[in-house]
Structure formats: C-alpha cells, structure tokens
Amino acid sequence: TDLIKKVIAESRKRLGKNAQKRFAGFLSTYFAQVPPQDILGKAPKMLFGLAHGHWKQGRVRARWKPLVRVFNPDPRKNGWQSEHTVIEVVNDDMPFLVDSVTAELNNQDLTVHLVIHPIFMVRRDKAGKRLEISSNRNPRDDASAESLMHFQVSQQSGGQLKKIETAIKAVLGDVRASVKDWHAMRDKMTMVIGELETPPRGVNPGDAAEIRDFLRWIHGNQFSFLGYREYHHSGAGKNARITIDSKSGLGLLRDPGRAV
Image (tube, rainbow, N blue to C red):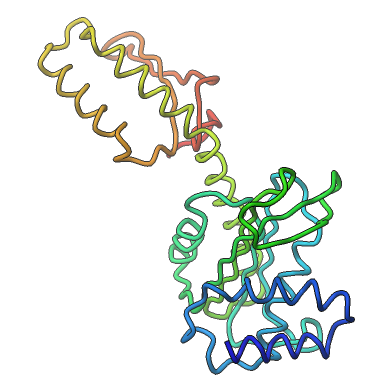
C-alpha cells in the first residue's frame, strides 16, 4: 500500500491534474492483485512508467481486436527501463487468456518473471476510443470487460520481438474462436450423444453404449472444447477417402485447411 501511494505521488509529478485524477483510480486497480513480493523493491518511477504505458496503449482499440506490444523499455522513449522484455496486451476479457499466453511463452523457452492481470470495465465509442474505464463490476450496459495483461520475460532483441508478438496474436485468436464457439461445440456433442442412442450399423451395441457414456462424461464439464469438425468417409481399402466438411468447423477447426 505504501509503495502504491508513492507511485500515485509520482503520477502527480508527471501528469496534469485531470489526467492524474483519472489515472490514479486505474493505478490502484492495476496493481491490486499483484503479489506484493513481485513488485516490492521496484522504484515508484519504474512502476509508474509500466502502468502508464499500458494505460496509453489501451486508449484506442477496434472492436474484437487485441492490442499486443512487445518491447524493451527505453528510458528516453518509455520513461522507464527493465532488464526484461515486456509484453503488453489489451483484449476482451474471456477464459484461458493468461494460461494460453503463458503456455506460448513457455513453448518459446521464455522464462516469465512477472505477470500483472487486471480486468477493467471499459466504454468505447464507435471508433474504439476509450470513453471511460473503471474497476466497477456493475457498470453501465454499454461497458464491456477488458483484460490487461503485462508479462515480463527473459530479455530478447531484434526479430525475436516481432516473432513473440505474432505468436501471441495467433494464440489470442485461438482463444477467441474456442470461447465464442464453446456453446455451439457443446450442442454438437449433445447431438452426437443422441445419435448414438441407436448404435451405428455394424457396431456392437455394448461398444456404442460405452462410447455414449464416455461422451456424456466429457460433456459434463470434464473437458474444455477447443475445436470441432466433421469428416466424411467413403470407399474402402485402397479406395478409402476422407474429406472435410468445410462448413462444419468450430473453434480451432473453423479453418478447413488447419491441421491439429
């Protein structure tokens, strides 16, 4: 609490009265869920620069479009510095965001040193300009929840920064597709379970019942549905063919050209 008070005091030095008033509320929420040991010992000037940069990044955002910035803080350009590479994300709030981005960073053999993940209620105009930002979870009807994610990883340089940015944007697209189509995929599973009430021709009724029970178990919130696609089988032996129903894809399998 004392440290955040010092950061707010730093903001008073740097910002005009009106801007500082709006930013002070943002600042308190921004660090509210961060484990104290993760930021104790950091200079107030550095924490101000970190939070204010993220604040500025989210000023304008097109609907449904994530903002991703990967950079090495420069004192002259950003007003603060760090021994780590910084990743800033502004995205619609939805499940699996932090886990998915962290998994991608781990896949790239990057050590994650810090994660900050506040959620704000934001109102924007038609052009995506931010009109209001609040920590109030019971906002006006025209506000929507946005996740701000700040990661610090082992310092990178050059083309690696763009590579990380591209990979994170792809991951966020996958999360959005899976979350948006989640109900539709559950409906498809319900349909398949219903079809198995009558065992397919040539399938042992006992086997069909076991498969049906297994699918019911999966459907009972035991599994996170990520993708769905229908395949058509034709012919037999050397003439066997498998084709994709190009209009059936959901989630990660929306694109019929994508192999998983």
